[in-house]
Image (cartoon, rainbow, N blue to C red; front, side):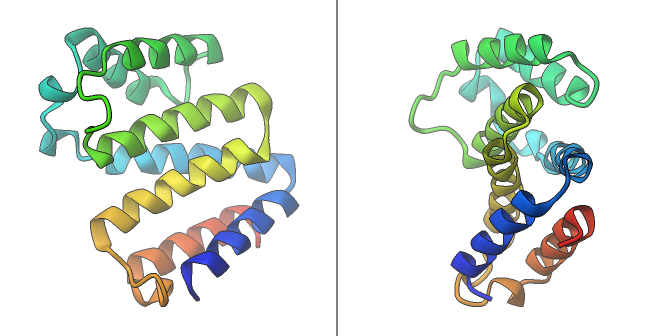
Length: 155
């Protein structure tokens, strides 16, 4: 399966899934993105000011339990403290994007926010393992991600 086919499959799976499955998938996806975030491999002091670093750590630690308003405030603190506009480590971009999409999904329940969250998880895997775009599932990690998505969304 090529990337475009996978992307269309993902969007369709999200659209067709019941609300309870979407929420379960979203929770598992943000948990996965946070768990896989290689913060120890990044120079966070170069990327973020100290308040933004603190907010990032707090957002990652509390993403599944924090109230929506608290997550929004943490996201704003992170954005204000970005030091590397336009040149941020992509791995950090995936984390920010996922936290933002998770917050948006909690706020709106919109399937587009969930799709964006799922895309951030896929991008995180893509960055680490570089699958062939024409044979996306030739990469075992992408096949495992597709299986995880199918399990949660029963696609």
